[in-house]
Length: 198
Image (tube, rainbow, N blue to C red; front, side):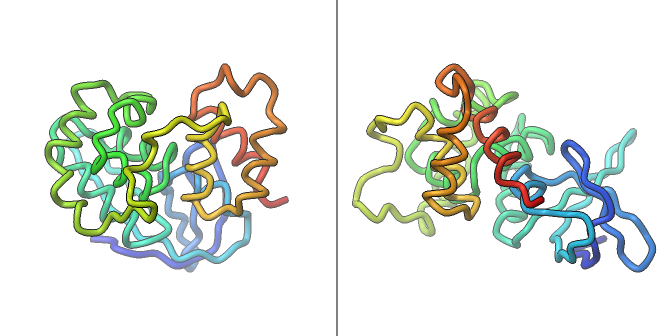
């Protein structure tokens, strides 16, 4: 099937983008981080995965092979469908998801819409051993084990994992009104809109 596409961004929608590949428009569901960094006319290389069901044929796109592989690993877990896997990648970066699974951080995983406690436990049970070898904790401690003074510390971690600089991520979060009352996902979405080019 289709493993990779290279083309120009034709249109950006709420959760998807249309990639023009030699005159053919491919509609791709992608994580928010990729949407936020994309702009019309920009040339992109997107790693893809086709999900075929009786009543649906969908194309999912990712900015790296590592992100695509994580998506596929999550799909292998009972109870995790493409929408839930994309929602996880939209809320947290790949490194943060893997770290949360290895450190058994249920609180972080269940902040994602559609991920309940039982689903998060299955993610940990089935993927923890797979990720142990390539998740490192530089400080020698498991991540997210101590609270940050910032109300939006998890949102900040997510933006850093998506490749944004510390200063610009902090600025985008601090400019939000009533951010302490928002979910991590909503804080990240607002910040991505502020950080989007143009």
